[in-house]
Image 1 (cartoon, rainbow, N blue to C red):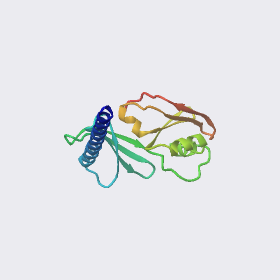
Image 2 (cartoon, rainbow, N blue to C red; image 1 turned 90 degrees about the horizontal axis):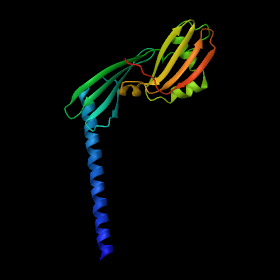
Image 3 (tube, one colour; image 1 turned 30 degrees about the horizontal axis):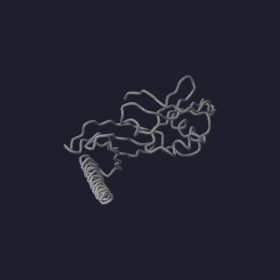
Image 4 (cartoon, rainbow, N blue to C red; image 1 turned 90 degrees about the vertical axis):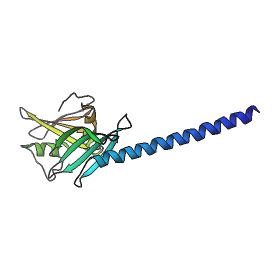
Length: 183
């Protein structure tokens, strides 16, 4: 009798769990599609990312340009079909190709030259949505590579910083774990 009751409860729990999981994934799929449909787009690539709330989604609209990307980051309330927040991140200089020789006179050349380092190249190839910022201080280029999807929390949560002088010498390649930059 005890074995019969245990098997019956186990079957009930298993069937209930399968139903709940199916309903959860079905609702998440519907909410994802509702969030994508909320953003009107003219044919650019759209990437969705869930948040902790089942009714909120991050939608990334990727617009390629001549030498980089423009990312529009939307936080969408899919239940109400409204856009909660919108941020635009421009990342130029990523698509620069060709032969670059020192001296490095432009940010495009510095970004392209930074990808010659094997550590940087491997990191950039592994990024989901690559972005870069470039600064020049006293003849030294500081190139910061990061993933745009980390901006959804308001601060960047990591990247790689490359320091190159104008003569093409890579001075430092440093992994940054937390950066507090507000845009």
